[in-house]
Amino acid sequence: MTQANQALVVALRRLVATEEAEAAVCQQLGYSERAPLAARLACGLPPFTREELEGICAALQLDAATRNELLRLRGDLLLVQPDQPSSVDLKELFPEQPLETSPLHNICSSLDVPPFSRSEAREFLASRLTGTGVAFSEDEIADLLENSGRHPARLQQAAAALYASRY
Image 1 (cartoon, rainbow, N blue to C red):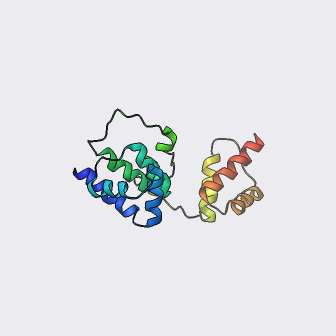
Image 2: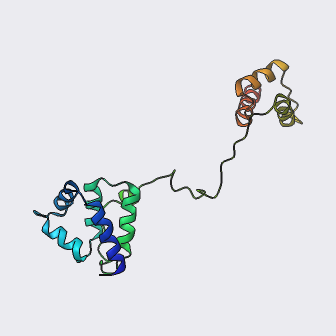
Image 3: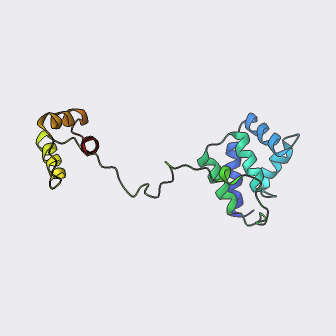
């Protein structure tokens, strides 16, 4: 048994440790009894195909990380015929996980920006209006500061909306 095959078999043994899980996997693989599964897990041959592993993952209702790890281990096996096309839809094989697969994940850290002080907020608004020929009244500035909580992004959005409503 190859090292990759052994790693996959060890992982599968842990997953089918309960009778209920073992029964679900046997049913998924079409085994009427547990002996064939036990034999495959004992020696690791023949290796599990992609379709079998996908069926096992579905039967055990595995989370995406565990499923992907099993499929990764299976991909390390040299004994599996690479010319066997998968019958599973590509969107199911590689589900979109935008929050987990951002190219910036672990590269860019979040930055907490505290609210502006009143004077900083007024300077911010004045700097944005310089050269536009537009001036907000004191009441409008007070409303902007109050409604935005002096948060930089919200202040900029509120000021842009006020500017757009005028022009």
